[in-house]
Length: 515
Ligand SMILES: O=C1C[C@@](O)(C(=O)O)C[C@@H](O)[C@@H]1O
Image (cartoon, rainbow, N blue to C red; front, side, top):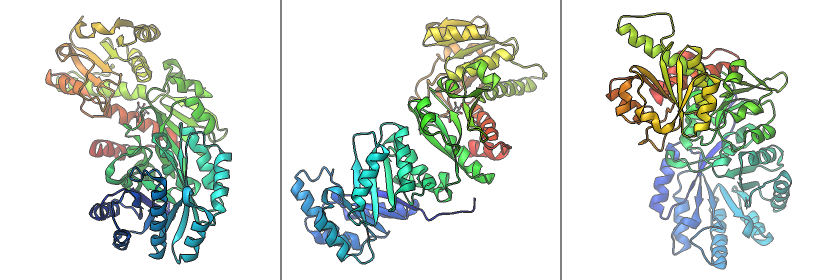
């Protein structure tokens, strides 16, 4: 992956004072921004000379903008007057980029700015509100803005679904003038992360590690995604989930692609409708996917072929697009990941207690499963395959009953979980999202009830040490963290993604040292 393209990473600064602006600019530089957008509409000033001073003191190349939706300017005329004054000043001072909003882009203003500029580049920008940004709509807008003679066009586009980003990628590839395109909101995040694949030369990030909806943190652009190496040949992988922000997949798979020299990028995909997602992003470049909550079962129906284990489970957590014919093939790497993590921990415990054996230590055990969604199904089938007696608790009892029938187990009403103690030394596996960030104070079962368990496993891996695991440790049970399952299922995925080997030690080191 030697190819490195000239990408400019910027962040938007909305600051009231010059001190704040200077400090933010310094921080932006430290976090790897190549330039900043100075939103002068957020700056408090009584005379234009204060703006002049501010611009002269800039320590990074800048885009000067004066946004039309600024809460500071309630009167349109005031806004317009000040906006034009600021833009003219920025051109006179030869600031690197001056952004002219569609509201003031009329002929005379543009003509004056263009005639006065020397080196500065003029950006004509527009917001695209109201959703449904079709190719035609974006194309007409671009033609309109291009007719102003601007050097660059910028569009900030409202998107309702991740699939609305597809026309944005189309425009990035086909726009005759350099285009800065940003799909706003959580579902627009891939417009920044995958933009460089489609030729974007500007990418926007958020400052201070904050995740602003739709913007990756500046630090992750540089350190996790390394977008300067993304090019048209980069194959796209990602985690299809909702929510998706908690996933550590990008922190693991991206460095592993680089470590193995594979030209791939792995991104969070906030998907509402899996079928729609695959209908729209259907080309071979969208090569492989992890599937997270709540889509693991619906995803089975999107696959052209499903591996027999995943088929019997009825849930996939991995989908590969077969390069030869573009067909989607589903797999389940959760099942083995979870069961082997539990087996290894029990074997370790037995070893220290003096009786090691080759038979699965789960065989014959009472295996209590909480949660009957996609992950729960994988775990139930895994436990059953090792000869455990499976008992399932789920908030929606009907689902527990259906899964119990599939694994010849038993389903019980959720309310009975805390009192359920037919024997000592049971195994508990939480496959529900209870306890997951941000609701880390929650736990699916009382601490008292945990005394009946030899081993407690939690599929939740954010945080690593959930309340359930802390309390299980306190009552003396062996605990297995969701991180262990996470790394094992990811190892299986990486092999499928690259049709090669997964660097086990490297991936384990990332998970245990950096998460
Ligand atoms: O359940 C999980 C977790 C996951 O969704 C994630 O959060 O990255 C990725 C899936 O492959 C896996 O099965």
